[in-house]
Image (tube, rainbow, N blue to C red; front, side, top):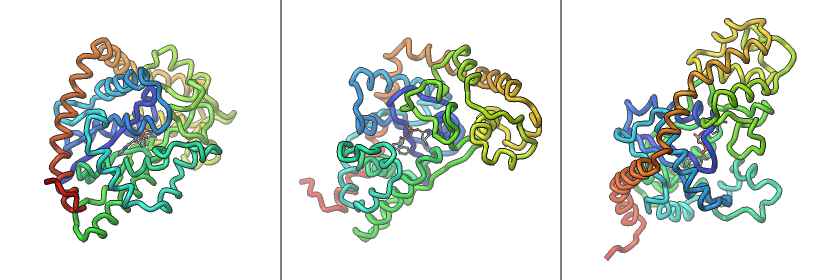
Length: 332
Ligand code: TYM
């Protein structure tokens, strides 16, 4: 049976990268697969989070997912800390994964930076918890942006080693689903850096909570080069900012980059940015309004998460009973 699992961290507002790289794809997959979507608050605290900020962002990210079209009746939508299986399986995976595997994780190196000795142990073991998220539901497919690919490979290695160590074909090897014209949306200020919740400059990203004026301003200020747009995709080589804006346009319009370039060949950025602003506002505007409506009633958002948490426990508990049995944990 195919089952999807994916997650998003409540460390800030959802941005266009999260939407185009992941959440929009979740919405497209929800009619084909059984889906479990998780707001990963336990991952969030691998770096310091103010407690009230974490609560607020958990509700905001949930509202953003619902506003983008994730249907909580059809899918399981919940925050991770409500379901013990994540922490339980993560511990077992801490004992399956090898130090050498984690040492290769580029995201840890980027996030820990020069202060490696001062990073939390949780940040280091982060990919093991991520593997546990997926495998506590024995999920087979994981729709994510490009940046999560290495973590997914590690999840497959962990599943394979567990199966091998215990001589059981228990966990599936989860497949990444990375698709769309914007699997890696870059910063609007620097086309070589990923758009991210943690970038200091808010001008680097378009948030799902930004209003039309803010979106227009951020796109107007977005870094570009001086050349007009090329007619062919090959003309975007060595032009990271231009490539990024064209990719964003293509993803929002649901077209290929080449189709967008055919329409805008020879255009100046001023003209292209106007069209991009209109498109972004037309797509994000209604979501923004729906998010505001949902956040005006936090009780409703909480009830969605509570119901999702109950259903997630129902799915994961029988799997964890088997895991405990396989590992040899006595449950007298
Ligand atoms: P997070 O919260 O950083 O991002 C959530 C999703 O958005 C995608 N994404 C992007 N896609 C394209 N361009 C970007 N600039 C961009 N930034 C983010 C991410 O690839 C992701 O799909 N570790 C995960 C959360 C997680 C998870 C999981 C995901 C925890 N457990 C299990 C899948 C399965 C993360 O930090 O995502």
